[in-house]
Image (cartoon, rainbow, N blue to C red; front, side, top):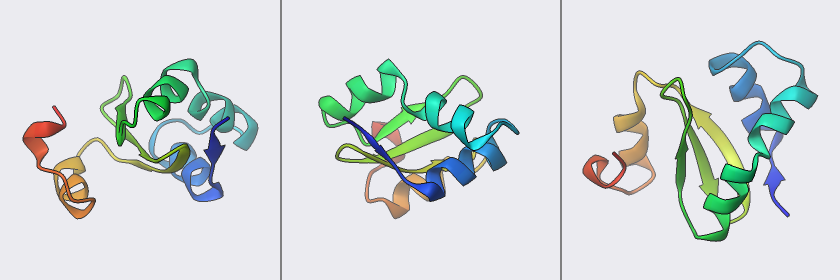
Length: 83
């Protein structure tokens, strides 16, 4: 089971697609995101270049595609590990 924060839903709507909260939740609870959470991934890249940020089995936010390197450093990883 994956938990999706309200913040992540808001950021998905703002940064990925202007959809309803239910549609955003459905997109963030995809099999790929669940699989990534199971193996301990911290980020999942979307088709538009945005990154879903995971902390364990929780989707905490969606980072924009244009400034993810700065954001990734804030989460404590080097950017060459992400790409």
